[in-house]
Length: 542
Ligand code: NAD
Image 1: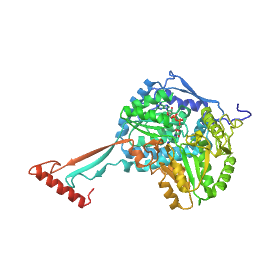
Image 2 (image 1 turned 60 degrees about the vertical axis):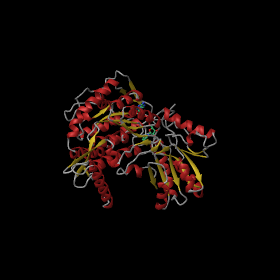
Image 3 (image 1 turned 90 degrees about the horizontal axis):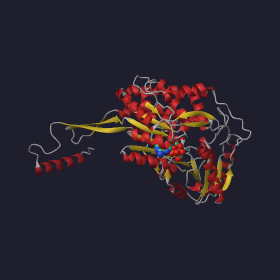
């Protein structure tokens, strides 16, 4: 099938010995890799529950055989994590945040190794792998420097000034269950573990089997930087078996993946009255206004649509371009898509890598074939490239996609984008919002003020102006997440950190109780309270 493709050999960081060393963290029983003596390997996997042959998307060759965690072993991993969490939560926030800053340095120092493993497991281009490394360093610095302040006890206004002293405390939930997908194996594995850990939680983590090695590597780096082993337990195996076992054990769930699975996760967590933050799919729209700088819009459309071969939750799958510039934009965009350099390799020579597996290839192909059958035109790409590797597919630009085509409103999650000319920004906004999803959007205009006025009217959790996704995602000080079928809850920012804590209000009353007391009873109490409430409003006291 792969024709005359000559595949790149995996680099030394993926030697048999190195892979076995990383997998050994899964096979170890309790205690052996504990950095703090608190106990806990990574789930104590024996392999009795089967294994997954993980293949490298670049070649289709087997990279490793991943032993599965049994449901009983997930419960044991949860027990070990909870035991280790007590010490970790008792450690000062200053110490926990300092570990994040050391972890930051280690991530940058071991960037090449991380990129090698991300590429081997996901098949993405080197530049897209490094984007994840930079992202995790960004998140580590942000929470390393901000967590102490965000989690500090906070004085709140009491019910009565002077008489009530009220403080809000933040406690870690205990055990956070993280379930992550394969498409951004480093970002989505570590990105949610970082705030959970710095808040004092333990993590029970189920990465997708395709990309478990990346999780094991970033965990190894975290341990070397001072994160105790016991508090980050990794479990692996069939999603429909191990995923529910994680949800059953966790005090709070963070799930990233498809909307269909997200609904199941929400139902199961809901039955246990455990909160689930859900980061789900998208059908993201870019709006190119009549006054947009064409070169910048074309660059943004290429990066936004084809990063990680379009297997990016934030990627653009719909472009609404003002008809005044539609012909010129579409011509230049299609030409730029044709110029994208595809290829396998653990270096920066190619600009786009492979799809991850045969299922992603089939979905991409089906969406294009279906669109063409319904009358769409292929302006660029549209072709499978087995000469480069089994799952390579060209960046594809479609036009004339009718509402009846599946890719009109369904997420493709591949390198396929449809361009639609529109008569006005009004029409673009209406069409962009006419989607079941609401994750990310992008607006290109020379006028930042105009772009902001368009952005505010888009029902999307993030909107990038003169950028496609990286500006909003990379702004880790601000919350990120979806609306509608794109999810519930937010990562990043103070909100993303507070999400792994529960709030406790402690209010101390002195001198006078809040209720009736002494001579202030019945009507007198009512009069006193009425006067007090009026005075508080007059003094504008919150
Ligand atoms: P998926 O839902 O199939 O799998 C995600 C994870 O859930 C995997 O680890 C899987 O093993 C696990 N899982 C499967 N069944 C489960 C179950 N019944 N209970 C619990 N866990 C289960 O998603 P995918 O195809 O791997 O990922 C691609 C999807 O993820 C796309 O829709 C994409 O848009 C979305 N995504 C969203 C974001 C975001 O931040 N919003 C980021 C990346 C990907």
